[in-house]
Figure (cartoon, rainbow, N blue to C red):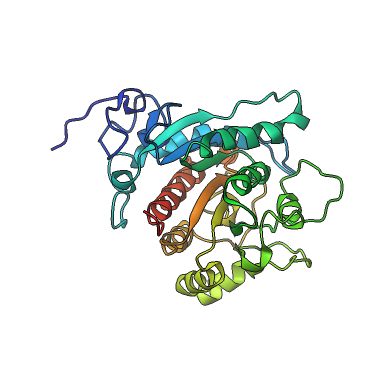
Length: 316
């Protein structure tokens, strides 16, 4: 039987492995990974971007990173069920803490997020970002394009397309991918949007597997179609928690009925192990609207599936 100790977020000796800790106490980091900004020997960084001033409906996603971290402690004592390996045996993962920005100067926030991300990934590690509203994906994509080159293929889970036309450069969580596509940061033809169920007639050339398509065709078909579209290109994965049905993820700003179950979403993400994943985010968890922390818990589980995909990249 394992001997429990505490506060691995602060006192962990090794950046690898999963060590049991009481789920109900101790300093909270994502999956009890060590809090540090020393990136020597680090493979993957988890960070938070607590921004929600770009929301069009209910605010509150600024509390998402904290809620996801707290929810993750319930699963941090062992390898998540069904994973063929423990990603933390392959990857040295740390929690970097949150991006700091001046909320009183909103016009400066996008550049601060991009600089925060760049300062991490330019040192070598990959990046998993916890939002925050979905706008944060735009400066994150800019940072990844600067390092990996453009265009990047986008793997986008959402209830909304986030490609509504905007010519004014709004800081808005519904327009980021319109701008990213127009600027050549992402290539819609080699990108996939999964779970959409709000109307936007202009697809901008994205491959759309909408919510009804997922339900009618099933998980395996989604995985096969997505793999075919993405190929071996560099992929950025962005997951808006409102891709899930409000029955399993009520804690979000713009919930839409008819969404994926947590099982479907986790199975699809896990089924994409081996793609060329270069970066990822999990956004729009707004815990004030949650029930029993189920949205934050779903976010933590899906984030772990992303880490598993990252650990399965062809170059590892």
